[in-house]
Image 1 (cartoon, one colour):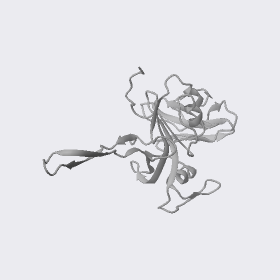
Image 2 (tube, one colour; image 1 turned 180 degrees about the horizontal axis):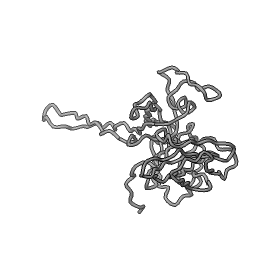
Image 3 (cartoon, one colour; image 1 turned 90 degrees about the vertical axis):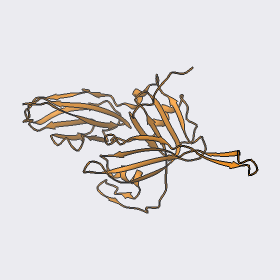
Image 4 (cartoon, rainbow, N blue to C red; image 1 turned 45 degrees about the vertical axis):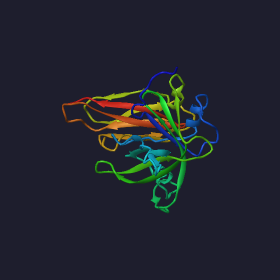
Length: 261
């Protein structure tokens, strides 16, 4: 008998071109590694839902009692809002075209249908897989910002429309970028020189950013090094934000704290 779980909350979410091999516990990590991680999920926007099935009864006209039923399964959907993104992500999930230098986005055909494989890993290490999902993205309010509202619904394809895989005990660290240091701490004073985070990666850092509501942080990248600078904290309370660093398709979340005045 397998372990008990609750599939609680969401820890990581990835999407990829449609997979061509059946997902199993033996290959799930490599399938996920070939995909793209969603780097931001707006607070409390994630949900997984399977609608109640519909039941149609047919009665015997002579007795008035049902003698046959038809059951139609309810639609399954993963929904969330991406609160911070780049134009490449917007094009991949919402459609349209991103400029080659990443500086602009142009809307596309609103009737375009996009298919992806999606992988949602819960906090208790259950990976929910939609091998073939239709992806619908649209502009969505994200607490006074414009996010990307994402809906992923599984469809019939080469494999079952949905699989759940227990990934506890697997080397999920293969999905995590090794960085040094793993956290940063600043005094209340402004630091215009900054402190650095170095990625232990083959390629240069492809993405480095702090949440959009953390204006006190400035994050820049060069090669495998990310520099974090802070403005002065005039408040008596300390403050904290997470810096996301991505390289080699892996992600590291680096907490940054600054003491209060």
